[in-house]
Image 1 (cartoon, rainbow, N blue to C red):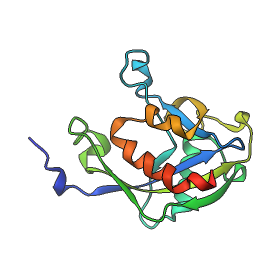
Image 2: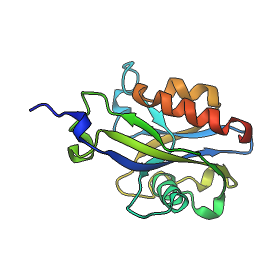
Image 3: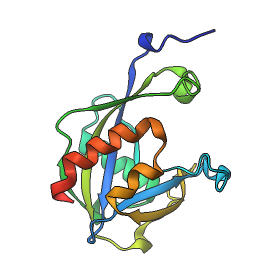
Image 4: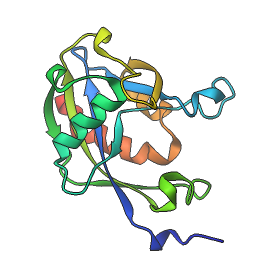
Length: 167
């Protein structure tokens, strides 16, 4: 059975561009794709992001997702900005119908820019079960495009462009 993406809604989501004092961006290596490391496929990293609940405030959702995926609490970040508009991406055909129980065609995302005020020791990738990431690192914004899955690159470019002057 073929799924017509136009019949599916976008999943509401929030992402967090977490930057440290040096202006480098936090990325986590996806635990479900790290097994392909070194194969040239699947060694993807991403900024923390996840679904937001109905009626959930964007900042509250972003802080919740950040804590779940990184173990970083709200006391270790300062929210600097939010994207002016939602950003959208569509899933590639090979993932359509497989992610999120097949209910969505992609995601509609609000993004937050947050300054990390803690130390690397405050990062706990095992804070949530199951864990989202198996490793993390801090990268320059120019490196993000080479690390993210191809279908999210446009969204990442838009986030970087909007937050560039604040990073």
